[in-house]
Image 1 (cartoon, rainbow, N blue to C red):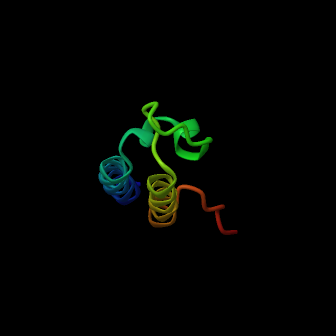
Image 2 (cartoon, rainbow, N blue to C red; image 1 turned 120 degrees about the vertical axis):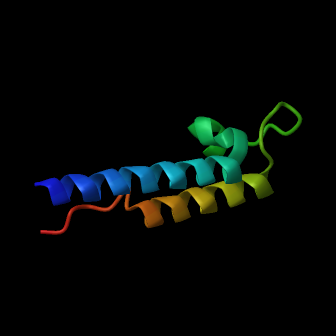
Length: 74
C-alpha cells in the first residue's frame, strides 16, 4: 500500500510540472478553452491562428505525455 502511495505522489508532482510547462508554452489560452479552439478575433486579446495551432499541438502533446485522456487498460 505504501508503494502505491509513493508512486501516486510522484506522478502527481510530475503532472504538476507538465501542467506548468504547458501553461508556459500556451500562455493565455491555458485558462480558456474557447480562446484555445474558438474563432480568431485578432486585435481583441485573442491568439492568432498560428499561435492557436501551436497551443493545440502543445496541449495534445501534454495529454499524451501525462496520460490524462487514456482509457484504463483491462
